[in-house]
Image 1 (cartoon, helix red, strand yellow):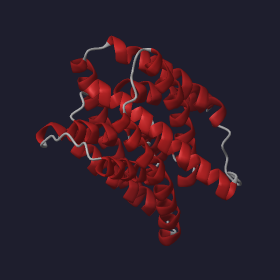
Image 2: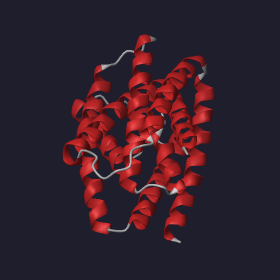
Image 3: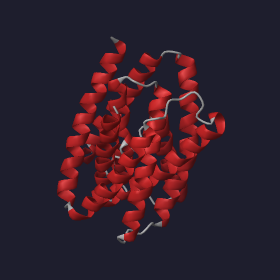
Length: 255
């Protein structure tokens, strides 16, 4: 079982760091499909793994010359607030439904819908948003969505950065990881303050976090080696697979 969870953390974060998926968007639906843990535990396993990946990936990118610009920091600051809002909404959502299967189906449906939008991002008009308040609000919305769905929000981040900030796929991927790092840190800190993670089986973190760290190094390395076209192709293939997986989870949760 530990080898399986290490492999999930590793492969998810390799793709996450390479093309900006983050990893949580892979980990969350895969763990939903396996069905071993409840939604809260899955969200925390995913967040810790993705956060560990984001730390090493961002550090490696900065060492290789990636410059953190002011507009990126404003979006990232918004994502910190969004991470807290999303975590609160998720807690209220679970209490209101009181049905894990239905909650999983709703999360899967929302994620599948957003991923389909990501797949057709080239068909949407592009802008170059420079207003600081607008950038902060964009970051807040991205952080809220990511935290609520428990996925880090990588592909959604990439789509928004490409469409609203006119970034290329490689730069948007790296910026997406920075946003994920801060929003997931906020989410985990708030959960720790609220509950100290009591009553949760987080034993798989001992293998998923090392998988996330290794995946962060590998993905960031190949992000510099591969062309924009190759990264874009890998990104789109991954999105198609994830849409199919999330639709499967929705159906499985409702049957």
